[in-house]
Length: 100
Image (cartoon, rainbow, N blue to C red; front, side, top):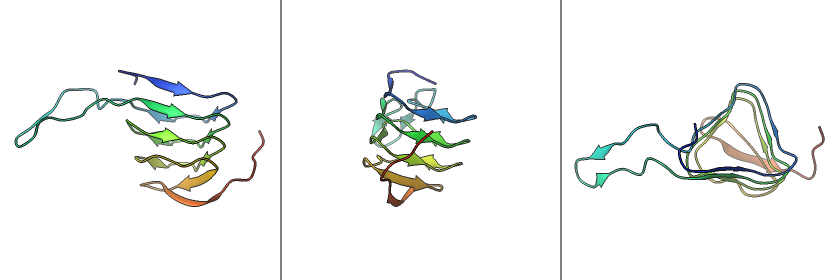
């Protein structure tokens, strides 16, 4: 779902059944702080591989040359050259290079 902006870099590989959400899909008001932040752009750098069934949440930047493991839920930024996986996705290593 794209409400604001989703940027996808060059040579990315996005596997099947991935979800990329830059919005939660509806407005929401919180009792103490008022309107919640419901939309934020997503940036996916060059040469990123997103494994099947992964979910990329609003406001995330995925650095270039990174790999997102299958079934991951990415809620925070991913530094360049990172291998991340899990729910929530956590950094598990450094990517030197990957090929299709």
